Image (cartoon, rainbow, N blue to C red):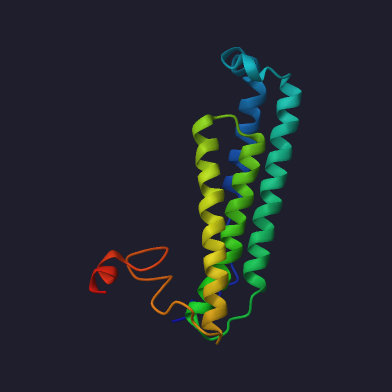
Length: 162
């Protein structure tokens, strides 16, 4: 089943308002933040410039991800098409996580970003291998990735049957 293309673009006004308000908040409250985070003392102007770089790089990454996904032609095979579009989607997630490692300061967010990078890279490789198999190459592991009930390999129930 296909979804009709209405030609409508998502409204980015709300997101941009959020970004502007968030930037203003950071600039106005920079000295308070610096007092709470003495290891990260920066002039508010430097913080604003860093946030602007982060936002620009995030926007560039999202634009690339979207363009890469939209550039793909449908093959007629839903499995191949899904995997082909998920690869740039996952690459976009890796790029966003990389940027938060550069600009972010929260240790828990940074740990999450590291996990996203590691997990998404494994999944990207798995998807690339599966696409090659689905496009007609020999399947070296019939019944392997991806199996229902599991994201990397056979589901536990399938393993018990063997």
